[in-house]
Structure formats: structure tokens, C-alpha cells
Amino acid sequence: MFKKYIEYIKYNPEGYWFKRKLYGWGWTPAKWQGWVIIAVFVAFIFFQAVMFDAGSQTKNDEIVFFTSIGLAVALLIYICYKTGESPKWMWGPK
Image (cartoon, rainbow, N blue to C red; front, side):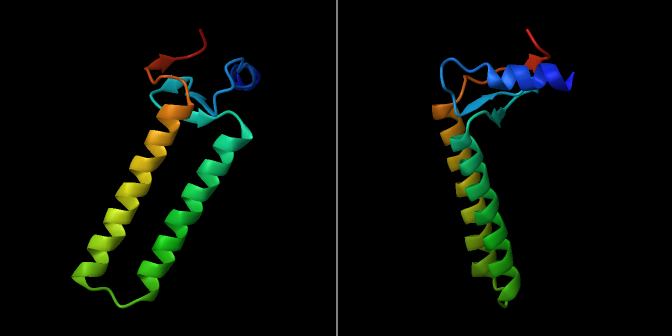
């Protein structure tokens, strides 16, 4: 099973940064550019969490925190959509 998944990810003649997940809906990184995008996203989320935890929280801090997280998620989805395969439900290898 794992071998088929690796073959699926490696077969990328179009050069997509993100390929469809084999099960469910969404994307998975297929090239180094996709992995860099995911690493930057995770680092940003971690940085926001540390900064939110370090300060004294006010109502405004919560709004800024959740807005920045929401915008980061929206940007990640946009990048995956533009640089990846079109999304659709998948239930295993073709």
C-alpha cells in the first residue's frame, strides 16, 4: 500500500507542487516547493501561537490571532489550488 502511494506521488508529469490525496479531499505535497510552503505555514502557525501565549491576552489579541490563522489557512488553500491538481474526492488509486 505504501509503495503504491509513493509511486502515485512520484508520477507527476505536470510538475504539480501538490497532488490530490489518495483518500478523501485535499492535497499532499509532491515537490520540494510544496514542502517549503507547508514548512512556512507550520512555522507561521507556531510563531503565532507562541506570540499569543507570551503576551497578556485581550479581546483584540484574540481577534488578531484568529484572523491571522484564518488568513494563513485561506492562503494555503489558494496556493494548493493554484499549484496543485484540481480537488476531488478520491477513494484509492485509480
